[in-house]
Amino acid sequence: MKIDSLETLFKQELKDTYDAEKRLTKAIPKMVKAAQSEDLKTALQEHLEVTKNQVARLEQVFGLLDAKPQAKTCAGMKGIIEEGEEMMGQDAEGMLGDVALIGSARRVEHYEIASYSGLIAMAESMGNEEIQDLLRQTLEEEEETDRNLEELGEHLLEQTDSDEEEEDDEELEDEDDEEMDMEDEDDEDMEEDGEEVDDEEVEPVTPAPAPSRRKR
Ligand SMILES: [Fe+2]
Ligand SMILES: [Fe+2]
Picture 1: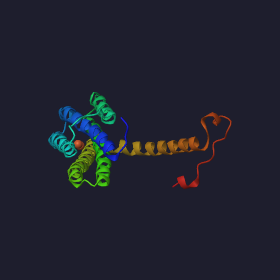
Picture 2: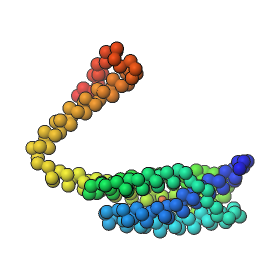
Picture 3: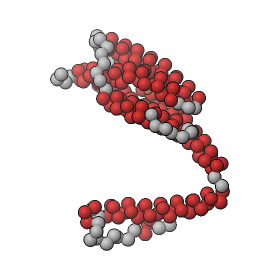
Picture 4: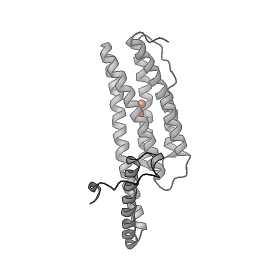
């Protein structure tokens, strides 16, 4: 189809976003099932309801353009969902599965935020305020969800952190820290070498000394 006007482009992107949201109404229940923490389960369940409403809102937008709601495969969202499913299929210890799940869910939100921001910008140019309002409501919901997920993730990581610390003997921890520091320095040196010389030239060239700013 030739994109000969802003409205044609807008409709095309609308169909793509409609497909993305509809896919999510099928994908989020799987994420709810996979989540371990009750907080994450609740957050995802709530976003499922919000998402169903977003689908309805997009249908309203189609209506305002005198068009029938139509979905056009959103390859981007399809890929993000596939990646998330792959992650859920892995055997993750404790809350690490939830941390990964939040990573997948936030990828979804960021993709949606980009889609809706684009649609709103086009609706502004088209001068359609009713459509802008509808899309802005959804954008705000996606942004809020992303912030909630970010907080939940931080909370889970803090828990994971303190659980691990409890398991370790304090003396051992100190030794580990020293070893880690040394490894970090080695890594930095390696990275520096990589930046200075091309792979093919590695052998004949003497590595340059690390700049002094790296030393503390
Ligand atoms: Fe959404
Ligand atoms: Fe969302």
